[in-house]
Image 1 (cartoon, rainbow, N blue to C red):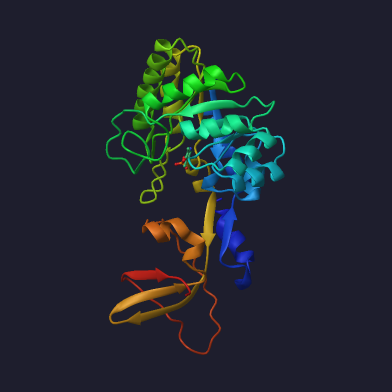
Image 2: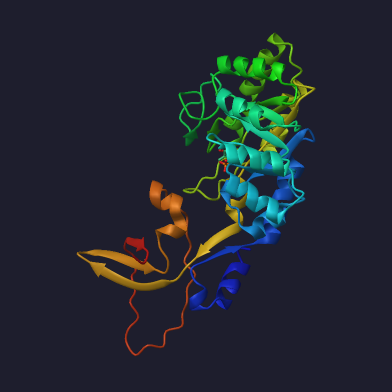
Length: 337
Ligand SMILES: *Cc1c(COP(=O)(O)O)cnc(C)c1O
């Protein structure tokens, strides 16, 4: 859509802005390209927290194998939009109401974050027999990555010793169907470090299962395929990732691998389009005042992340005074208060 974007923006009126603009055909193509790059034994889920816009979710339905949600709100949103889509429900802090909602909605997988959560779940089951993955915080060395969720003390997943407590509970309650492990450990990784981490995770999972005589058939390796906002042209290499997974999976012949990328699926197919309302200088520094505010870009604003941007020139100027402008000097982009 690079070339179609300015044309589309041309059709937006001032009152339409700021707008989130998505190229849905491009998104569909991107999802298909990811699919094609992956070995057959990989199930591709989309982590809805990356962008849960209805148009995006509807576009991805049928082009991914399912969706991952992290709250009752996301679960309800997805169920309303796509009543038949397979949904995995993960994340720490699920309430009793959310677990009940997940059981009622017939989610495809529940990712269990703690022994307490598993105990709570068993009190709510009745006749139901959910398929669960136990989320583990693996003792692996993750190094300096953008976002590490495991390998150090973290609210995500459980220590390997706690998995054994969960196994005892599951052994006593056959309604809980253990399908495997969940290992989302880090975000912002390129294809090679992502492969290395999955390799380490699967080797650990295999050893863990064989010591307990568990027939491990499923591991969810999470998402976290890197999106580099400071170098947007350096995209996650799905082909290298898929090619690297083939020999890796050959060493685990009975395993189905699930992945649940979010940002790397949608980030390149959407734009936040706004308008420069004013350009002003104060105490020697230039500011461009844009339509909209930080609530439209919550994460980058709160975390001081950089975002790539492009200027789409608009040459129309009909006021009887000179247009404010800035050339060849740094400018700070700010929003409306
Ligand atoms: C955030 C998250 C994802 C998606 O992460 P991306 O970096 O957007 O790919 C997947 N799984 C879990 C459990 C997450 O918390």
